[in-house]
Image (cartoon, rainbow, N blue to C red):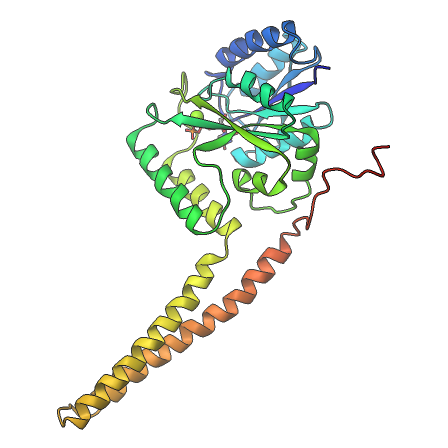
Length: 317
Ligand code: UDP
Ligand code: MG
C-alpha cells in the first residue's frame, strides 16, 4: 500500500524561489501519485523560518490554491536546522514518510524515486548523496571536503557529501525527536538514530533563483557547531598537548644536566626555562583533565536516548 509522503522544506526569504519550486514539486507529486507510488494525501510542507519578505504570503496562496501545499510559520528566524526540525516534528503526525529538501531545488527532486525504491526495500532512512559538486563554487567544494575529513577525524559518524536531503520514516523521525539537544547538527545526529538505511546519489544543481542564505559567517558557525555539538575530542587534544609539553620539559632537563656535567652552562637559565615548560605542561594537562569531566557533563546534559527499540514482539502480535 502506498504511504503518505510529506516533503518538508525550510524557507528563509525565498519569495523568488518558491513559485518555481512549487510548480516543479506539484508536477513531481502528481506523477508519483498517478503512479501509485505515494498516497493521494501526500503533501508539500513549507516551513517559513521567520522570513522578512513575502515568503509566508506565497505559502498561504499556494495552500489556498491546492490541498497539496501546506505550511507552518515559525515565530522568528531560527536557522535552517531548527526550521527543518520544526517541519519534521510537525509532519510526522500526518505522514508515514518524510522527505526533507531545500527550497532552491539544488537537490534533484527526481532522486525521490530512488528514495521510494529504498523505502520499499525496507529502509527507514535514505540519504541523498551528491555524486559531484561541480556546480558548487570551488571554494565551497574544497572547504566542504576538508570539513568532512576533520569531522571524521573527530570521530563523528557522517555520510560524505550528504546535506539535509533525505527520506525518513515516521518512526525514525519519532526517534530523532527523542534527542533533546538544543545544539542541532542534524546530519550528524540522524545516523545515531540507527535503523536500516541506504544512500541514493544524485547530481547537485545550481541555485535557480535568489541568493544563498548561507553566507560565510553562517557557514563557519555551522561548521563549528558540527564539531562542538558532536565531539569532545578537542578537549582531549588539550590533554595530549599538556603531556607533550611536560615531556619536552623533561627532555630539556636531561639535556641541561648533561651540558652542566660537561661544564658548559649559563647560571640560572636552565632551571628557569625548564620550570616554565614543566609548569606550562602540567597546567595544560590539568585543564585537559577538568575538560574531560566537562565533556562528560556536556554529553549528559544532551539527554540523548540510550537506545531506540526497532521491533518489540510483544507489541506486534
Ligand atoms: N534557510 C532557512 N533559514 C535560514 C537560512 C536558510 O530556513 O536561516 C533555508 C533556505 O531557505 C533553504 C535552505 O535553508 O531552503 C538552504 O539554504 P541555502 O540554499 O541558501 O544554502 P546553500 O545551498 O547555499 O548551502
Ligand atoms: Mg542551496
